[in-house]
Length: 118
Image (cartoon, rainbow, N blue to C red; front, side, top):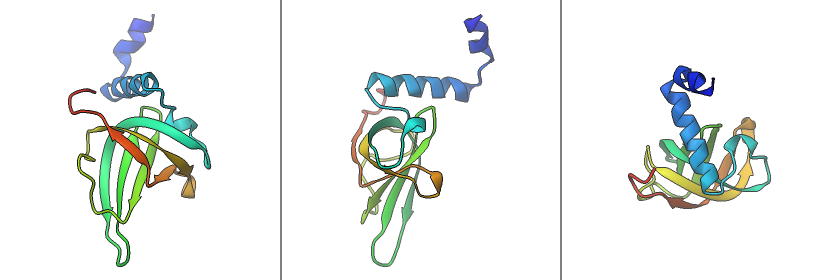
């Protein structure tokens, strides 16, 4: 019966399951379980990148999806980061904050997965 459910899943659901499996294989926790104030290790695909130019200090942001939820990585004082681009797999570590009930990690330690290794 499990195979039938598999046929009924959308492409997006299949991708979400694959992302979640890859994250767990790397020892990362699910974004959905990340709690404010905890130091976490997450792994997922970058869905969007944004530069927020400000007068004093720009911020570079990447939204990461792991199959369970979204988390934003924010680098203060950066306009870009080599390799941090839409579609790349990234592993990030840091302390979670959650203004407006959305998980954010400021200035995370991170590692990019090689292109094609996903």
